[in-house]
Image (cartoon, rainbow, N blue to C red; front, side, top):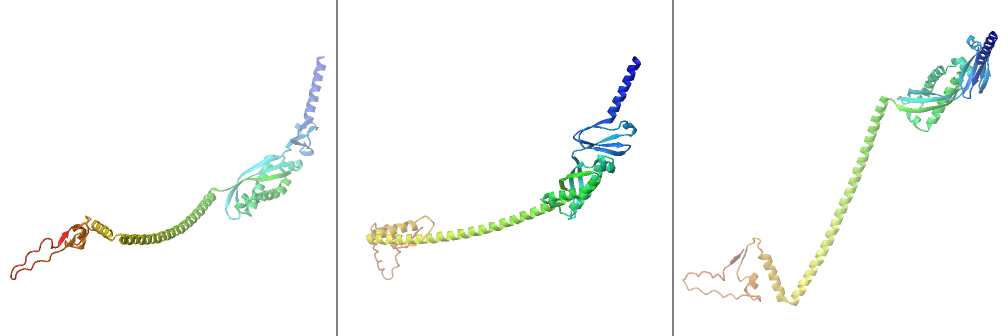
Length: 322
């Protein structure tokens, strides 16, 4: 009984091993290549459970699982030269998928790293060709989309020979190299300084025009004000003269008295002026008499013959006022 049970267990183990080694599963993100003694006998692209010949360890039937989704391959710091002769650093990536598992197995033995290594060489060459026909500004303009399409179209024939399908090519970054960046910065700095100098020159020119216009307006305004002031001064003098004339006609004595007082204020002001006048001068008319009557002066007496001349009296001598 025990021998029979052991035999049954052995048979079940063998059956389980055969089932395990002959069944494989492909999910929705995968595809499978069935190999028999190294040759492709079948390709499974639909998800499901499949059967193969057992004894894969004897190279009878092997299954190689491949990705059936879009893969991404990044390529950084590619040094390219544009039409102007300058060098730039470009970062790009490729979106691709394995479209033909048979060709992919034959070309690169089903190795994704080996396939990406070959894509790297081809992408580098395509980017150099596309950038070499254009200037740096093209990668920063609307032409960038057409550049990416052009790189993609150049890659597709080579990718097809590897069993791959290029879905898209994108340029992530286009930047100047360190030495070119410094040269570009210096050039931009010089341009900005020149532009600033032009703006300052325009400002100085505008300031001179405004200053000249303001000076002209000042001269014109001052001239007009002086003209108006002279006119007003003349009218005032005329009114003043008319008022004096009317006052003289109304009361000539008072007018003469007022004029004499004004003359005393102006002449006797303590400004250090010295006047030499006789006491009976017309200037002292209102000093001698409040009514302004002239002071009579007696004629000098005749001296006897042979007698010395008498000294002049103080009233008839010349007086000095300081």
